[in-house]
Length: 269
Image 1 (cartoon, rainbow, N blue to C red):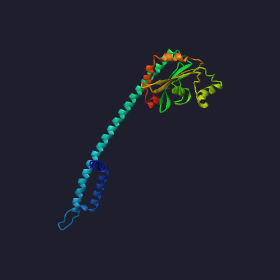
Image 2 (cartoon, rainbow, N blue to C red):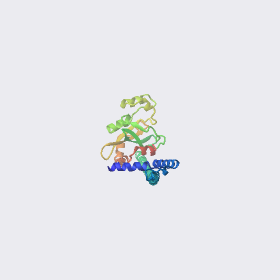
Image 3 (cartoon, one colour):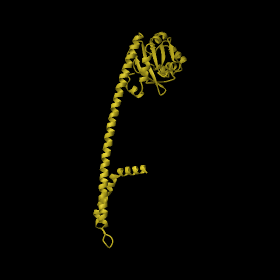
Image 4 (spheres, rainbow, N blue to C red):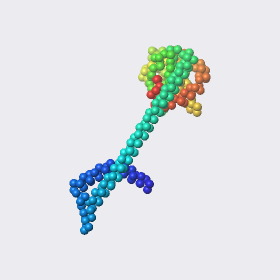
């Protein structure tokens, strides 16, 4: 019953403008047809005059309703505008937080690359899993060319990073010279990957170390990828030893780096 009453009131408010228009039309008809002069019965009851005043009263009522409805609409529009502004402010704040976090994370990766004594032939990348695909969330190198953007995402089961994700880590340091056809054959023998994908890789490294990062709950979250253009560019044990002191901050950055849309819009990868 309460819902029916509410719906009826909403309907009246919604149709108030139409009602005012119809009543205006009725006034015109009454005026043209002289309906207000109509009388009935032996007593000459002024039925036309009654109809006229009924229309007047209804017109006043619906005009008031229309006015109140308009005020309510203005109020709702103002509230929506305020909420939209708050959303924009929150989005701006979120972008600032994401940018600050990403800048801090990139600075941290730069410290790590120096701690590992990496040169212009090496780089470090971090990929986090979103929607069952790897998304690049951070990359650094002493060589700005090697920092340049590659693919935005990768299949979770493809290539060396997919192998490292599945097996917790993966290391290889003796890939052939990329100019040799055996480069692709060797890669494909380890992990099935299309030739076109390998051909399009900008950094054709000869040493890889993929290290999986688990979250605080122990579940896999991301992978760190260490690369070198050189054969035997670094040793696996050396990297693992250096990571012992920085593992907790890496987990923290991985856990905090949420919201792939914000990441894709703000991270310079």
